[in-house]
Image (tube, rainbow, N blue to C red; front, side, top):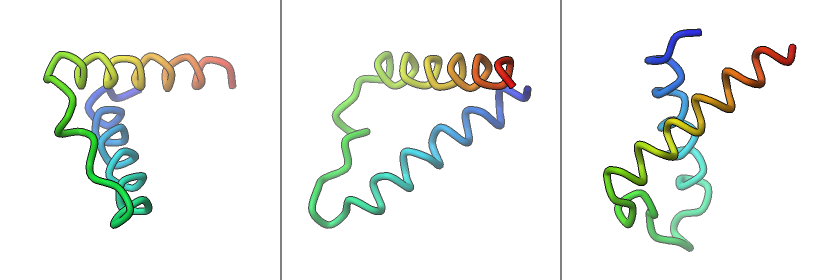
Length: 55
């Protein structure tokens, strides 16, 4: 698995969720610290790798 692609997928997924929720909600990424965002990104990557290994 390509980690760079997984990172891009993470941000694309977040943007898609926010696009569906707008204009009812405000973007939440700006509320997260860089550390929190990196942690979420790492969790997304770990989950994606795990799911791929289950197939």
